[in-house]
Length: 266
Image 1: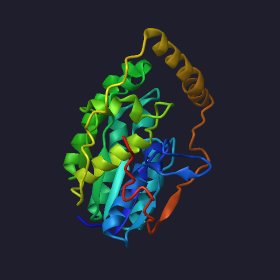
Image 2 (image 1 turned 45 degrees about the vertical axis):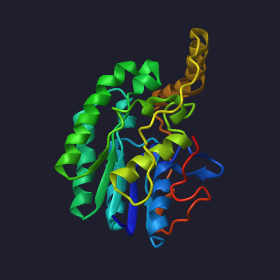
Image 3 (image 1 turned 180 degrees about the vertical axis):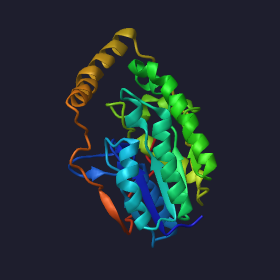
């Protein structure tokens, strides 16, 4: 497939958190995918409307209309995790918003790709009770995608998607390596030309942590990341408050020094 206009919709993963920093900016899997696409089509226009912290309803309400106005022939939609980790989660309502985006984008002629979620209980043990939510959400996303001929990258069945090395220290956002794997997964789903690495390939085994090391790691995570996140929730605040999309208009893509797609060394 060749594309002229790629628009990415979503939250922090699509914005690129975990792959860069606040000072220099974030790259992320969608930027990497745009670079890979531009390697074969230098005239590609790319917009990234994703904003961290957004719920599926907010992605739908705030990003769909601007995306349609850009007339994409390729769109990616990744949303739902911010809903899943909050109280009052309703998978049917969340996927209703996601499916509405699928319907509008495919109806406008775009090829659409979406991504399901991994077993977050294996990433963060305290999130194990949310496993049933992940399974419910994923099943509904896959069913909605089938109804609208949307391509799906299904992460849940693959053990590597819960490997610590694919995740940042906050365990909410994937690392540069994780972003590179998502890029490869979406490229494969799109059957893009080129040599695609196997994004499901396990990483080399690491020495097993002792119980003491595991306990210290969990305590540090609670103090550094879980605590501040809960504090924002109590105050009714979101990490996306006051933020706007980093790339709201279609613009040419500059290919990174890492090469198209910016593969991360493993």
